[in-house]
Image 1 (cartoon, rainbow, N blue to C red):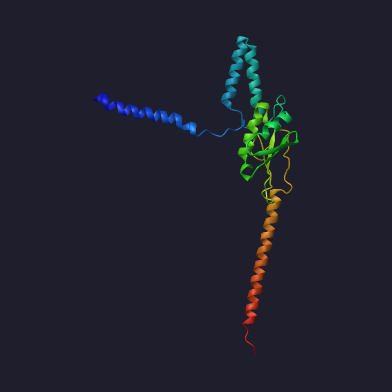
Image 2: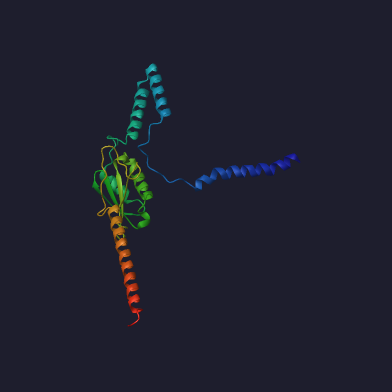
Length: 225
């Protein structure tokens, strides 16, 4: 009897374990390109130094070179320094970016700045930039590339604003030795100032109209002498 009572409990536990293993498959995290600009990990650096010392004692020059190269790579990432040996080739990159969902056309503004026109505001977001960067990743170091998105279906000045970000850095940050390329015809800050000025003028006009109406009503109510 004990075994019979135990079997349903075992079945429930097995089903729960299976559901725990299979549930994450329905919530796959969005792919992100490799991120640069992160500080060096002290534990990783210490492990690489220990591996270099151990390999040097054993005369294993191959492992020494491998670990030194890995440390150099980690330092380049931390310094936001693009790998000069892995530059992104222009035309293959343009062709790959053009295949990303929502992208209608792609052109290089200069070597490091890629402009993509997208089909609708729903594609003018950082998720589309990530998808473009992931498409370019097999070609080289995407730290070389800043992606700019513009909605070709935009109907207002604000919708025409270009969204920009380096493939491996937060918005507004640049790779070492690169400068931020201004792509908008009118910068968002300038447009915001103009909108604030228009709102202020509209409020002033509304107050004047209200004052004029109140003055006219007051004159109308003055009794005739």
